[in-house]
Image (tube, rainbow, N blue to C red):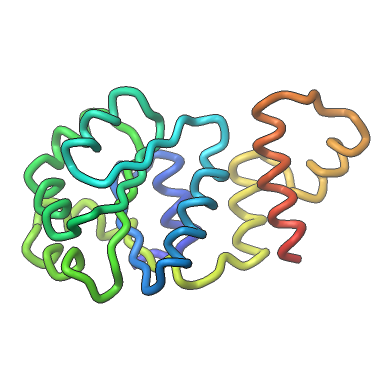
Length: 176
């Protein structure tokens, strides 16, 4: 199982098309959904709750988050339709409860399990400032401290992308 930062980066940088995020508390899941949306930057993020909606959403979004209402059903859907999902070549993250039906169903879903093995991670551990900084540098080719310095000095334009990056940088700065 990958650590949370590298699992998310693999997914967002699209080196792995499908990942699974295991959570033990609802708050951890919701916090991570929010963080994933921020880290997605200017990409369109769609949150869905079942497999059929996921396939439909992949046409219009850049990043897909799946928060299943029926975890076992979603796992089996993605196992049967893995190839269709992968054809869209868009990062897709499925949230499953640490001790839930979805995790149990994954044991009987060999096609999906083989794809998500390298991008499965727990969202219950907090992202450290160091890991968040590494993610920031990988995405923006500069540290959040340097980026904020440029922003505060007026060197960066007030654009949508820069405002999203500002949110990301301020979140890291606030954690330090």
